Image (cartoon, rainbow, N blue to C red; front, top):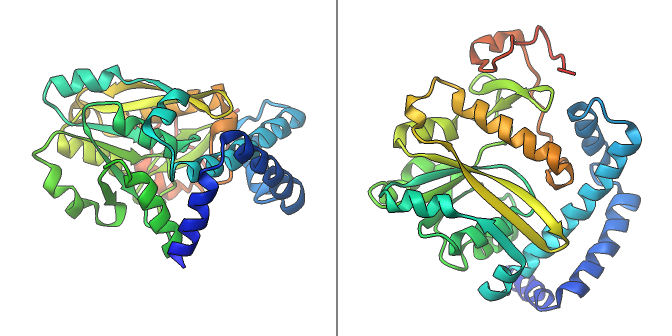
Length: 305
């Protein structure tokens, strides 16, 4: 089954972008207007994240999000066959920080967020800076989808490390210079083993792994901002988030990360993954010891206007 689906999608990927985006426009109508895929989740997330925006503006953002959401997956199919030259014509970025850190002899960790198009970002960054780009991924429940994404993410030599076996998978790389890319904005499995702080006006739980790992490895942490100047073109700006994470107070790295992530979302809300149930874990007073926000923890689950 995998080879049949791979073959069909590969043939689709050979189509020029203008045809692929035509297909995306048709899918937008079906998914947004007909199926209404997770529309209530998207709108609820937007309402809670932008309490001062009128409903009309939130619905405009939602429509733009769905267009980008569908483009994201159409563009990901294109990555099955796109050349490095063609990718670099469409994507730009400021990756100077990687050259500086690599010259110092250190490895580096990149804390990422779920902005479109993260699959393009992975391939583009992997071939345009001096590090070996290690991508941490969460295995998919579908075997076919898992194999497809692994092929795309690793087709230009990026080693893939399964998040479920991270401690073991990183061992061969510990004494080699590398760039480790981690998704740091996911909701953790539970609220007790998490950092809690306000994120987009709501109490939010963050996984502890990215901060803990940076402290243990004693590597600088880099982050990026994402923009989409026009359809099919992205720009990624990387910057230093923390030179020495181990020297920071507990929770400071995640505070910085959440603050920068929020600013990028506020600048380009249509590029963030609103269909994800990011705030599904609700704050409870029993999590008080996990609170790392600078504000007082909420009494229940109230929002910050």
